[in-house]
Image (cartoon, rainbow, N blue to C red; front, side):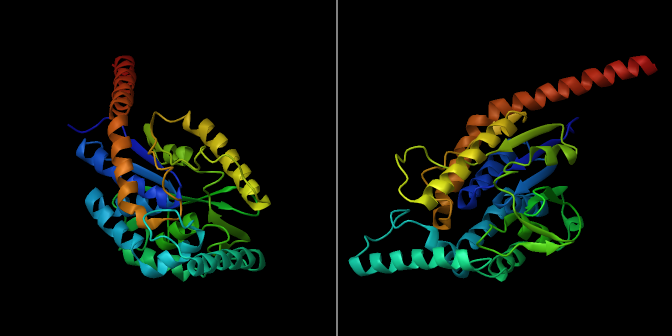
Length: 309
């Protein structure tokens, strides 16, 4: 039986941790809860665009795996990953020195240049993953959300060049160049518009399922450098804002992925499984939200029919 209401997915940012969205989609699809509309920020935009094109969770994951295993793409993120992240061989003294030098180079380069690498390091894998080139070619209504660095305003991509829109949403500041157009500099909106709940409702969703990816682990006891402290403050501010936003959704999925580094795409399989487990745990809440919305819609339509009757 066709649903009376539209289900929307708001897929949050999270870097490599955002691959958990693929596991969530798998569970929702198996449960017969295929979304009608999708909005995504950053990695949520990448996963959301793929699913909006394929409407197939397994095909979405197959393409994401190729993305996560792309050697050139991985090289972009390796300098951000601590030596202890993931399964690695123990570092010798020489390798440890090289790693330290690489990090210092990264810090200097991002302070002296607009980005660590060029746009092609992200655009190329996006063109490989996505067959569609225009939002109009997608099977489901979809929006990618970025932010204008100049005005601070949200930038929503719903029409036109799909690769451009997804790139803008996923262009991590300092890593990839911004999209510059109409006097704007548009980048990843993961801090101010982390889970695009309002955008999802603007697409027509009656029920919004928000998938939020933890931005940090609270287990680290101290921060020794000024840069680490500044980054921590930014993350705490984003987490606080996220709590307010997530209070407005109808159902929440929270994959437990804090054990994985946000830049470690090598951990893709484990991150996806965390999404599966979180979605299974959230299914009762999701089904309740859908049933409640359907009941409200039926009651409203019934009253309208009686008045018109």
